[in-house]
Amino acid sequence: MKNKKGQALIEFVIILPVLLFVIFLSLDFGTITFDKNRINDIMNDVIKMYNDNKSTNEIESFVKNNINGSNITIKLDGEYIKVNINKRHNFYTPGLSKIMGENYNIEVERMVYNEIK
Image (cartoon, rainbow, N blue to C red):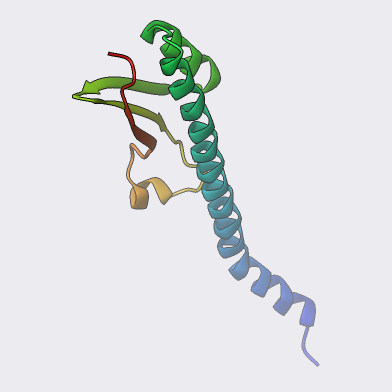
């Protein structure tokens, strides 16, 4: 009978990189999903703040305090307000930035009827 421990070690070494890649991949996509949901929640607060006649400076500081590294743009588009919040995502998985793009942004955009005229 041959040495089974050596065979198991070789199989483990072959499977380990695939296992680590899947773990880091799930961590990345979980983080992206979490950040997107968080930005959606902040977007609801931004729309409420805008309807309560808060200044754009107050809204921008609120977003920057709650989401690190985020950018917000508020544009008046006729009867509508276009609000866009985006945040750059840094990948944990080696090589995933090559597939998804170096500057992958998590972006949430809403168009809301402008009640304030």
